[in-house]
Length: 189
Image 1 (cartoon, helix red, strand yellow):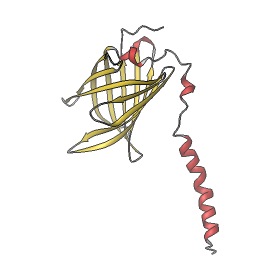
Image 2: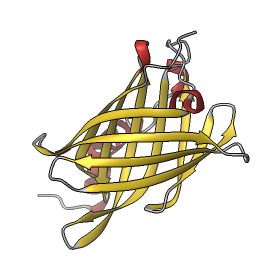
Image 3: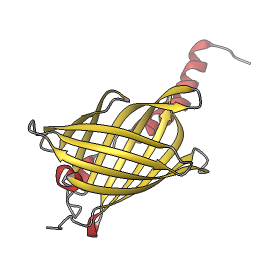
Image 4: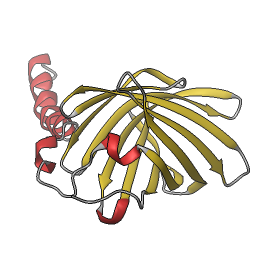
């Protein structure tokens, strides 16, 4: 057998390079592809006032871990920030709260902060879609894990907003959250 380093390296690169290209192609989604989707999602308009959501948390195999109902009170403060006071009622009796403060950073871009968010959340809208990315300190048993959320929201007719979030740790998927928000007072344009 010929063990020349040059041949082995070339062979390994030939095998791995296409796999890496496929992996990195899947990491970036062009938000412009959603620009014409209707109804348009206006984050401030949708979450201003009272919103209710029903959600589930699943592990990476799809097994249901928990269910919840979330009540959200949204207001726009004098600084022009959207403040979302969220109260979660979990199926196991736990009640938890989170307050988001969201700012516009451009015509279709946002940043957000919450006490359990590490650093800053960033989001982009196009058409009926919002992609929101952030790192969250999440209690798991007696420990706290830093979990990356890749959050996608899709505005639907009749005041419905669907939310699907993938949770990862060290780049590995650990679970998913699915939420259906209802906002009957939203008027479609």
